Amino acid sequence: MGIPAIMVSSVTYALRGQKILRSFGIKSEIERTARRAGEKSCSYSIVVAQNEADEAEKILIKHGIKVIGRTERLGEK
Amino acid sequence: MSLAAAEKIYSARRTAANFFGVENEENVIFTPSCTTSLNMAIKGLLQSGDHVVVSSMEHNAVMRPLERLKSKGITYTKADVFIGDDDRTTDSFRHAINAKTRLIICTQASNVWGIRLPVERLCALAHAYGLLFVVDAAQSAGVIPIDMHEGYDVLCTAGHKGLYGPMGIGLMILSGNNIMQTIIEGGTGSNSYSLEQPGELPDRFESGTPNFPGIMGLKSGIEFVGSRKVEKIAEHEFKLIRYLYNKLEKMHGIKLYTPMPDERYFVPVLSFNADGYDSEEVAAILNKNNIAVRAGLHCAPCAHEMMDTLDCGAVRISPSVFTKPNDIDRLIYVLSKLY
Image (cartoon, one colour):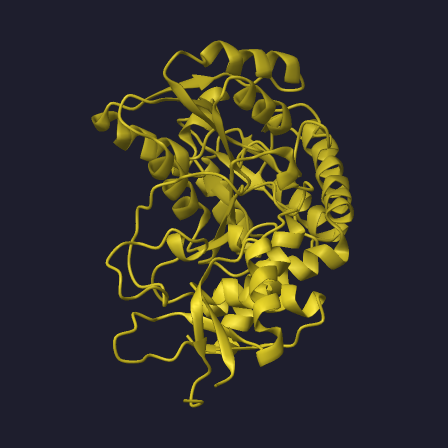
């Protein structure tokens, strides 16, 4: 299982999401979402630790960040 | 766009959001100019059959789009502005509203005469009638504290005036809940598989390569204004304008059009004419003496119509935080040599 990456629709959402997560003590990184065969991606992802992914996603949604899905960080698969 | 550049732009968005009292950074849209912002708001909000109320002092950035939209069945009414009488001005706007009115749009301060409009009251009036309110803060941002919590639906402003940014950058700030249509669509670096323009802010209104140098310059400008404090900047500029007004009032051949500007009803801008000279001629003389002013109609013929200066224009003095009393003395000296 790779490192989880929470996909959001824009870089602005990614950056705001990162700031929100930081305020909850969750460290994250931002990267372009990996494009894989069959995936319609051209977005940014907030990469978090495996054990914090579910909590992070809930926090993001609660704070108005539009989450479009979950993937794994670039180069991890 | 690289992530590093995106982080810088996000940081600029945060700076502007803090300055204008906006909660969410994505509600700050960077545009090429205030004119672009106003076009986006006007054309994005109005539909055929709608009616708009504007003030009698609007810039062509508002009037020309509205004139263009007449061909689509959109009409407008100009509400008179009464200097120093906000009750009467508000009444004038109220009387201009009709059953088809969808929007009130007005300048916060005339770019020619510096006359302030009671935009907080006009915004409340608009909402009381179920209308949208758009404010043009090109001449006021940086000298009047502005807070989006007043309820403005859209605020448009220029970067290069009181915000001390470079030319070629403007802002459109949205309240959280409007449903504007776009007038420009294209690549946003997001949702690229879809041929539909994204709905999310700011991407919805920021197609194309961002003006990174302009955005960074505007960020620095806003930080500068924030560090100097808007109220202090205005106080400094008003002191200069009042000093100038007192001198010009007594000067032979100089015509002033407004009462002595004070903070309640004006921003620190003063326009005048000199008998026997065209306004452009006066500006050229001042320019030769290294005094930079703007003459003519200032792209605001409606504001000139109000003072009956459409034929001659006017010479506008617009001090900055860097203008010193001896700069004003130099201006007075050069004008005194006209006669």
